[in-house]
Amino acid sequence: MSEFKKQNWKPGTLLYPVPAVMVSVGATADEYNILTVSWVGTICSDPAMCYISVRPNRHSYDILKKNGAFVINLTNEDLAQATDWCGVKSGADYNKFEEMGLTPQKSLFIKAPIIAESPLSIECKVKKIIPLGSHDMFIATVLNIQADERFIDDTTGEFKLDQAKLIAYCHGHYYKLGEEIGKFGWTVQKKNKKSL
Image (cartoon, rainbow, N blue to C red; front, side, top):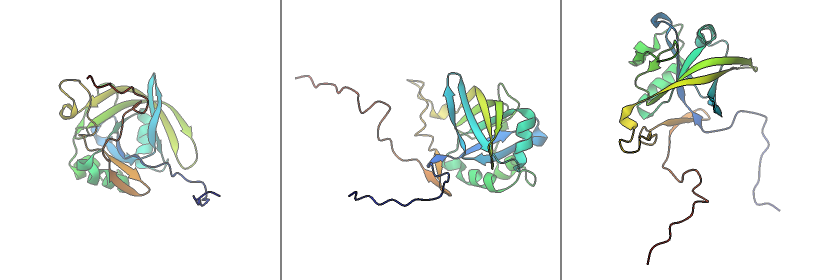
């Protein structure tokens, strides 16, 4: 008999932790908005594609649908307050960039601003919208990534996400990401033999 006791729960979205990102939208300054999204992820690496899922009653939904573009802005400890605030307040009532002291900057390939304070901003062009129930999924092609030079290693050119102090969302709470415990393939990597 197993020593592990499990409970059965009703179906739900408990695939945690997930990113807590700020998605920026709007082709012009008067419609710029930010929404906080955790239903976000990678779909394909070649071509680079990702998705966000948004409730149709969100203020940003119509802007997203009209312009067919958005930016996924990764968030960190410095942006934690803005991340939460932008998720509970509506862009119909507030200019979120102004309220949170965030800086909209032009994207290179799409009509939606990046958030300058974000460590990494991913410019996305909507390819398809799939109605799924409570949320619609916006499937998008990644056209460009803007990375904060403060987190780029001068020697390797690698982006140091650990130094960016990213945050994650887990069942109603925000968390700091922990220390690295391994890298892809570390379990099968050959150990270097010490020379005698």
